[in-house]
Amino acid sequence: MKSFKAKVLTVVTKIPKGETVTYKEVASRAGNKNAYRAVGNILRSNYHPNIPCHRVVGSNGRLGGYNRGVKRKIILLQKEGCLLSCLYPRAGGAEG
Image (cartoon, rainbow, N blue to C red):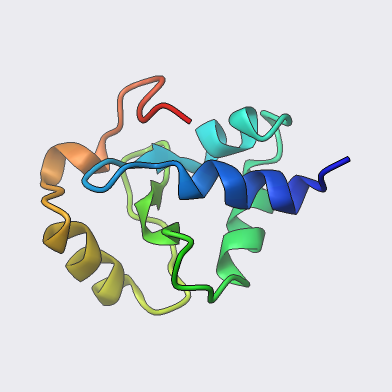
């Protein structure tokens, strides 16, 4: 059985470039819709470059944290073509 952490990282790897998903949506897709703070903690401790943690944002449209700095998060999202609309993900957002 996969751990919640493993499920979260799997969900995040499936977020397409140029799209964002909320911490709450990641938690839901990983099997525990109320564990969105745990998702933030898991992503904060992840430094693997193949896990696109920068694509996860707050439900309120804020960027949220990023272990490499929020400025870096903005740069990465912009490089992927994510404009302001990416910061306000629609319910359901990226498929995962």
